[in-house]
Image (tube, rainbow, N blue to C red; front, side, top):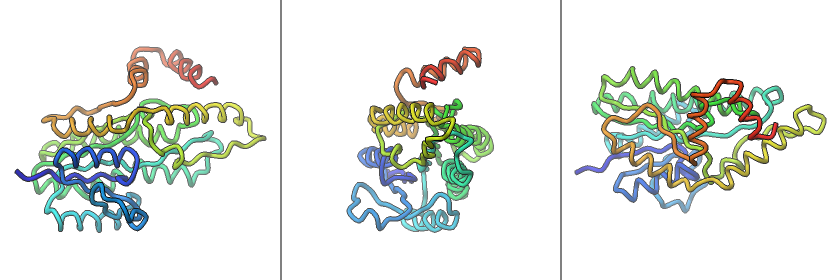
Length: 269
């Protein structure tokens, strides 16, 4: 039996790398992507393709290379993303656009690139890696929440549009995991004369601590593996610590202002 071909964006580090390593260990033919392959001369965990999710031409080149090598693509894992923190009032709009270009537009570009191939195969699976933060507006992480929340919603719509072609799409929302996202995210500077200086500084410290003490990203990889082996995937999946997932349940049942107060207490605001 032929092994399924899996493409994982942002596969050179963090959650994407963990997904690729785990799926390869299970017999899948894995390709990861990174913006500059030359930066990883000793990368041997799985094959890397050069691809920038913000650039449709780059995407088409990489997909064409993949199809030329394998003849198909069975699973796309849209994992590439960037973090962004800061008071919304003080966050440069260019950085806001950059975050949406990577976290929202990027996965859409990828979907558009692989869907014709999956449609011709009459089967395929797309897993969009979102975030538990995408289910709520988090203080000083509002732009990140918005970009991931938008991806959750557009996946719901796309799921209904492509179901008739035998293609499945689903969201997988991780909580905090021990990756390098904190070092790679854009931090609006803490300005000493800013009215947000003290609360933003406290919140940023808490956010970074959550990532540093996060769970093993292999848990996300295992969940991806389970989704791939599920005949009819659900619309939404979450993976993370109990309290992070439980917070989603609380958001459904609590009055908005009560939930808002819980968040503000959590971030010491």
